[in-house]
Figure 1 (cartoon, rainbow, N blue to C red):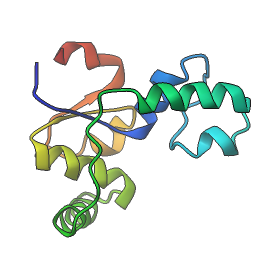
Figure 2: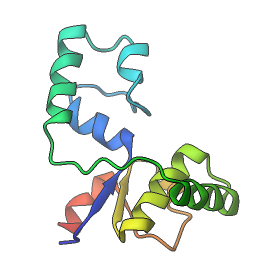
Figure 3: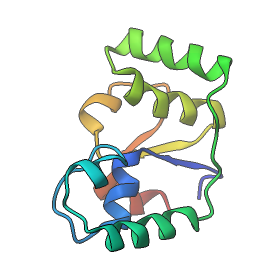
Length: 119
């Protein structure tokens, strides 16, 4: 099993909100999509913040790396940030956005439906 696994926000949202069929792209979609009642959103967020997650603030080095990945592979800065983070930690990236993030060969990227293969 890898030491670190990086997951993008669409994966976290799907894991924590498994009764939603929407492909939610970011955490604020919980509020904007109006798919979750406030009480359900509170429960989901409580689960999220109790997970053993290493939160990483963006540093200048990480931001520069993100910009390079975004520019080189035609990714949004947002998508490239997860690639950059995985690269920095030598992690495998699990994503539901394999079409875009899968372009990057410098980082091992695994599609969400196949994440059990890395465990």
